[in-house]
Length: 163
Image (cartoon, rainbow, N blue to C red; front, side):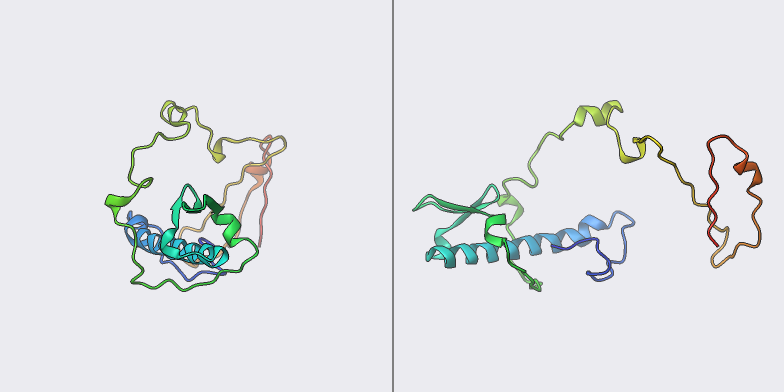
């Protein structure tokens, strides 16, 4: 699945107002269900078995009768898979979910609640500069002049101005 690449995916309207999950979630579920069906079809064709004799579990397609298994990656390897997902693609009902919707411990959860977790903004590398973009006060405003001499005179400050 391609997500977040504006050169390859349609405009997604944006992320705001807590709408990402209710708007995008069902689409991601349908895309996942369509891919699951495709992987089942690929395994059935490769193993010459009935698709309905296969199961998906733990990131793999399994044929219980022969103990044969292939990971999703193995089945998709070296294939360019491009599909338009049917808006009516059936999805697994929440009552049948085995992972999503189940209580799980967050990896490093204690570090998050104690403030010990380091986010990207917390990282400082040797020689790293931290930037601040100065935005205009109004839409379509253009810079007339900038006196950055006070900032440039400060220790450890580099002024970068693009015209």
